[in-house]
Length: 289
Ligand SMILES: Cc1cc2nc3c(=O)[nH]c(=O)nc-3n(C[C@H](O)[C@H](O)[C@H](O)COP(=O)(O)O)c2cc1C
Image (cartoon, rainbow, N blue to C red; front, side, top):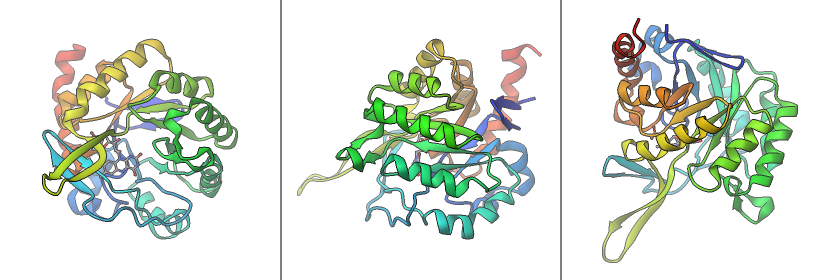
């Protein structure tokens, strides 16, 4: 009853596990039974994979804030070659559509990453544009509509499976969303984390700068989903602060076709099951079955 189709991507449920919040599958089976994974999770989105291995940032990398957390992980990942050899075979065994989130430092990186994945039996790729573009002096892709236009155009020519672009919630969000639609991406993910800062120590002043996620950001991201869905046709995957069935349903009713849960997985890796159960309890009253 909850199945959705976004272009050619068929999902058993609209729930996806968001990038970076469930590792690379190493511990998933420890918390969720294989049958619950298949039944409740529409798709798995891997953590950001880059061309070369990346160690990420030194600690502290994560810190709680009121109703959220700030992360400064720095896209730690094994790199595409090791990912294909050491992680992909196990991820495919879950029997759930797999979307690989990609991280690049220039347009060519994303093209090379797509080429590396061309013959793998994954369902699609998700492009993280919240990274600096070294070719343009480090200006973030999400602040540079012209670069995003070339990026999506080139990827679309190369990649005929599911292609989604994960937007930042800041910058010219509407313009970027419109470009993704024009350049025929299959979906946009709204959105990544918000640039934020936490004071860790007062004296001497010690701060953690990173991306804010969790329930604190839900009203902000939900507004973006609502407004963009009113203006554009491109399917939207909502992501930001979902920790309950009610939260997820709000995204769906405000224009998202599917949704991702991120920080929720860190609170409780079994939340996927709980959220789908909760959505099912709302269905008769909302949709009048
Ligand atoms: C610890 C952590 C790591 C993340 N790593 C990635 C990543 O590698 N690539 C990416 O596109 N987003 C990454 N994100 C962003 C999440 O996928 C998600 O977009 C964001 O946290 C908002 O959703 P939430 O409020 O449900 O967590 C990360 C988030 C967290 C908390």
